[in-house]
Length: 340
View 1: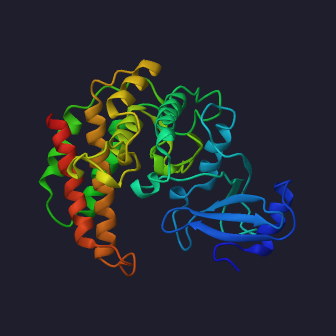
View 2: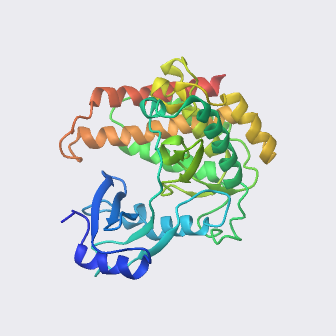
């Protein structure tokens, strides 16, 4: 038995919805934790599929909405944004204890850090980088209404809504003073750029949420933060993760980022290609990069406080001092970008 999978209910459902399924099914947890759980389902013939469900225990359904995630991936199936093929969404609690959906298993590497990045041969790195830029341009030109995602969220006032949300998060989880956070919030509020149009925004667009193989991106994963709004939020976010070799760690993710292995287009080339292909002005991109660092600082503080007060159980190897230091580091990075 696999925790999180009621095989007596799930296997018959799979046999009904996945035509290629043959014989018995073996389930293995691929990604787990406090986010959505991902299971690899392999049948007797070696065919593989992926099942996604919320974390175990009592969770807010709105925070782990399988129907919403499935809707996004299914809607993008015929677009120029690579996503796995989907087989169905189950909302019947009699099948499993929670909603789940099933999609294709896509072969390839997930580049979480520079150690993973070393597995990509150097000639493929530039190809992958250029493909990432192309996909982001394609995502931000998808007709959201035509593919059925026009009701995914509010299209306007993206930054206003985000600043309000993460300011509340910061204030609710603050355990100590980080003056840079308050100063960033002031500057971000006072110097907010005007939103020009609205697109689908992935919310966590980075190599760690992509499957790559043979010099190209095979699939974009983890759509749980996807919404509608300002596309430059995606651009600012990935530029912070797009590290050049030898870049000081204090300027971003440091050598932990997969692009730190070298061979990828530079941030400048990334920005130039994106701007040229979409027609979007990136002259204020440092604002969006700062916003991304500030938002991650607020998120990190929430995680730090939950561990500090014991709400997450044992620390399970989490270095609380390092977590606390990273909150301040992100805030400093944000403030530096806003002041330059």
